[in-house]
Amino acid sequence: MFIVKDRLCEGTKWHERLLPSHPESDPYFPINQTDPRLTPSADSFAVDLKTFTPNFATFETKFDDRGWQPSLRKLPWKPHSGSNRFEVRSVNKFGVAGPSAIVEIDAR
Image (cartoon, rainbow, N blue to C red; front, side, top):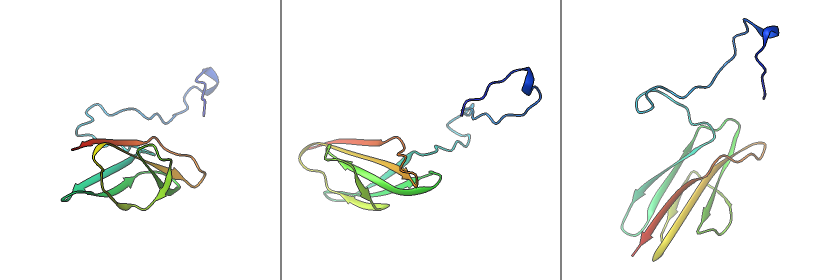
């Protein structure tokens, strides 16, 4: 939405989303972003996905540039030898995808 502030709307209180002054301690809601939490095991990771996406529909994941696939909130990830890339994003009920979160590791 585009809002023009001029004399016609003087006195109107508009909502403004400002970044917090102290982001390390102030609450801030990362709308449409996905937070992948990885818990390591012997040779894999348990991935738990969280998001604050209005009208949330699903998560989508992409492994090593193989294309986006619908995903569950909890999933396993077993990296192969060499460079590994894991991407995840949220998608709302209108098909709008949020920004992707990326995890890259080099397994030897």
